[in-house]
Image (cartoon, rainbow over all chains, first blue to last red; front, side, top):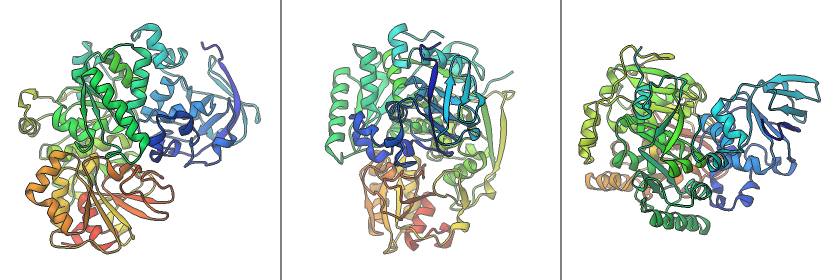
Length: 169
Length: 417
């Protein structure tokens, strides 16, 4: 599948019902045309220290219904800009799920109770396996629908349509 | 096997025998953005296509979230959107025209349409029988470029409503109750289809309120069949010729059936910080509030202002509570002035804001202070939603909001009349 089908990083743990207002609050709407400035506020209302601590490759590990609320694709975009390589959650809200895939950000459904904050994780996207290296435990994640996998493999919807010119379902 | 409303619309539009779970590609009847999602959408559109919109007459831009603009950056975003609309000959609605979802209902949405908007409350148009759903900027940019999108045909929950609402209990209480039953992710990826004897007696305004909040249970659409109420609304709005009868088949397949007896409902409140954290108003009576906000795409329509005016007539807001009212559109504002609702609200001490999203999403026009509580008629009470993560938001009907404005605490509207 993707060239870098193996992702490695540290788990940043969040609870359930993390809304798009936690991820990137509406009060920063005036920064939406200045994405680097906007990205400084990623996850601010869930964990104000997240932006300083997160490193390229790390994972957001959350409970159920991650990304509920607004359709603002900026939410997925600033998470990607922060260097997060994938989101792992028990479940993901519909619009956010589509947005994350459209941004080329893998979003995987799994039992995140088994993962603790700070655990080192390795995700094999091709084989569908998440390894918690800290605990030496393996988890599987739910299948991504084919249409979304095709979009993800092209790095997002805009690159997908740029390449194919149309939907090829 | 018969079809649900969603299966019918998506079959018709995609030219396939669409069933729940299928992926279809469908043409879009109306695509729109608003001022906080539009700029990103347009930049993405320009990455894909070095030309013009594929269907400018089916494309609309609404300036509603930050109007009149509170700062220079958003003013520049507005400029960018105006320029794009001019270059592409698409419709643009200036600040003060109203909230996108209200204007879509007033001017565009018809039974059987597919509507895609870069705003999660696009589901509102389901009140008119449209398959209307919110998407992000990339998806909308592709509709700008190609005039179509891919959709998974949703499984449907049938919500059957019977019985008569009690006095001062209505659509908002119904949908808050339903979200409490389903949970904030209880209908993720699903369609909510409303039916039953109570529905035929519900006005379009009430149906829009219910459809608007379908997304708060995670649903992809919240959709009503069309009937003579729909037909009358379209005729009044000058497009009676766009009416078509739309009903699900009697033998359609539903994933889940939920029955609600409207006569058993009480005024309901969604408690901070999630919309599915619901309670009857009696459980919260006496909770002190600092601000009441009446408006939004959920409850900023004429009937909502009528409800508030009926309760506030010849009375004053409690001195410790601020009262903010934002009509959902210019049409609503004009009618409310003509009937006298605005005069009543102003006399009661309300600040009237221009038609738009106003205080709903924390940009301006009513940002909460630390440890303050707001009772709002909006659809979301997430932490930080009204501009301050240290504040709390309760959601309720315009009647409960108006009653609470009189007392300064959460109040059952039946207690003040």
